[in-house]
Length: 101
Image 1: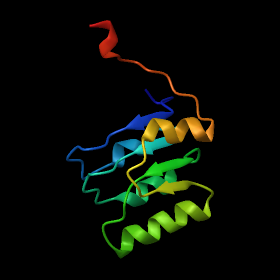
Image 2: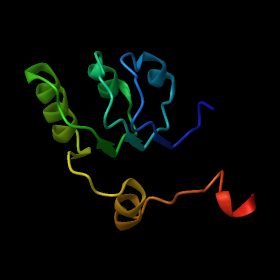
Image 3: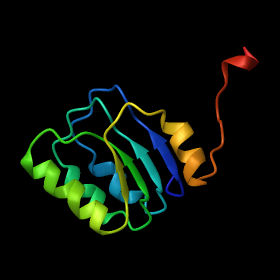
């Protein structure tokens, strides 16, 4: 699991994302519609290229600005996560599909 590159956690009730700091290969993360309290964890992820999240306060705005300064793309719109990754050339793998049911 530590080699995970893409993670979509949109529309959950996460407040603590500290377990993500173990995901050093993580490139793309969607944590929209969560109430994250420790967004600064993302600054510890060396390979992070894309984050989907809208700041909830000034502290989070500062963290997102630092991510941008490090070269990470921060998306605060309702764009499709996977369509955006495709545009950026980040390869995705579908692990589960309802087509198989």
